[in-house]
Length: 313
Image 1: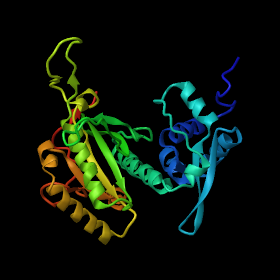
Image 2 (image 1 turned 135 degrees about the vertical axis):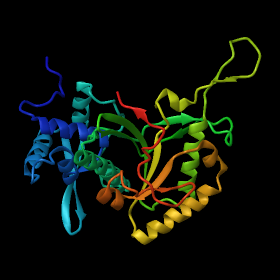
Image 3 (image 1 turned 45 degrees about the vertical axis):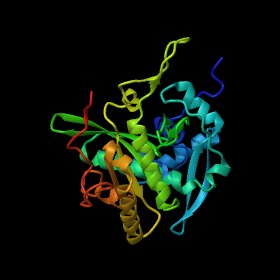
Image 4 (image 1 turned 90 degrees about the horizontal axis):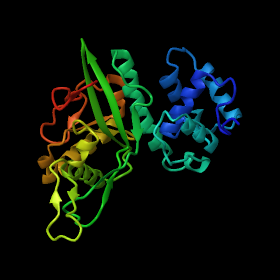
């Protein structure tokens, strides 16, 4: 008996790719999918036909969104579509399910901005001959840690995305991993600075081992920080600002730098944190001096290829 949610007969490769991207990123516009999956097509009609094939099969749904005087469709997978992707087993399973209510809800713009940030990396990687595809970033991956400032609590750091990028120059391949936080000026600067503090605490957190049952003695802290079990080097933290004028975003960067300078935990953790705008990332790309360090000099730098990198396999 065939799997009840297997792909319908005749589903093309592009439709399958679209289903995977929708599963991974939850809500994506037609034009974002076009840029990610079919950039070699001058127009998006072919992709639109594939998306409507998914919709007719009950695998995907869409809602309209007004932008710049035009209506564009925002796509997500239905439960049937999500189960079909999970059945193939190529992507890490995600419990989250999008719905029409969520697609029209207050997180719509933020979700699309995170996709737009990843798309900027994909497009510049394509232009530069590097490697970064539509599935090379994962949204909202939980990282558990403890903070000495909040004893007894198990805390959870959830980046907006964890993005992997392979930079290629001559025969040298360098794997870069980014923690990405997208700020649409919806949260206060104090809250954004607090999130930076959470990254510093996660950087320093090393799990403790329990003494043998029935014996006395303090817990022993392991020598290896928790992040080393997941990453060969601590990912660079990239803050991407959008949702306001360039002048307002520049003031926001200055305010964030001031607050960060007053947090000793950030300096002690030696985090590599850069902040830029989504407009700069789109137009100039991640390897131009568009990132203002949150700590230290205010001189914009590039994507920090100089150190703390791991050679790609």
